Amino acid sequence: MHLFKKQAVRDYAAAVKVIPIIDFGPYFAREKGALARLAGELDHACCNIGFFYALNHGVPDALVERAFTASRRFFALPLAQKLALKLNDNNIGYLPFNASVQAASAVHKATRPNLNESFFVSHDRGPDHPDVIAGTPLRGQNQWPAEIPSLSDDMMAYFAALGAMCDRMLPPFAVALDMPADSFAAYFAGEAHANLRFLHYPPQEETEDNVFGQGPHTDNSFMTALARTDVPGLAVRLPSGEWFPPPVIPGTFLINLGNIMRRWSNDRLLSTPHGVLNDSGTDRYSIAYFHSPNPDRVIECLPSCVSSDNPPHYPPAVFRDLVLEFYRANYFHQKGHRSTVAALAGASG
View 1: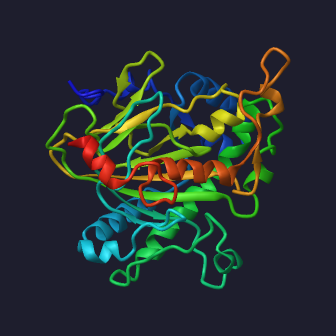
View 2: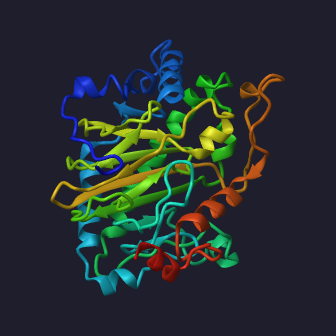
């Protein structure tokens, strides 16, 4: 049997006993006591599973559907037109099939490339933007297909909505970590590092071990907000070691924490492994929004998460360096990637 081949869960009541639904509505409406209650729920979910469903998140369903429509239009383009926008050093643009692999780690040692194609966008900077002119790492321009003039408006509307939603979620995370509510604000000021990844997974004919739509991994973000169509494939590794397939619950985003939040919290909060196996027999689409601090900020364990009995597990690091290290480990096109395509092909037979 495949590493995490599981039957899809359709019983929402059973699913939320594993991954809780957290209602952001009272907090966004500024109800009295809502911040403290929400922080407690986030702390419980993120210390024990690292995933939760966000309900009443404030993003209209119509905007989500508009983003999925844009995604399908992009992936329907001829391959040559997509390859003209091939992923660059800033990890912006088109990533074709078999062009990434999950770095070997305690999660899983993948030796076969991921069976998905992706399109990455970030902040929409113009050619005269100072960081674009200077060639500042992680501050490049988006790449758009001339064949679909409306694509940038559709995708950037979603990018902006998800960024605003995640910014509004920062205070309860700070309170959950016993910090003042505004503690994270300065880290996200001046243009946070954010990426939107549109994903297309074709049906997989092979389901043997090491063949994945997306190999088991942890994200490198502060948090990730995932929107999915009702096609199964995602699996989350629970603390017990079991792989659990979270169903799509209408009106929610599935949110998980990434390695940066785990590092910041000195391992108090979880960055939970997950991956994709699309054995559904049909195409699968998802949209992942990664929300992270400004690349110039120094990330070090929060004072509320360290003590004489629990010293910092990680040294201070500039966030940009952590991102570039992650990119070099996972994407073949990045300079310094330790595996070549030829070597990978040899490993996979």
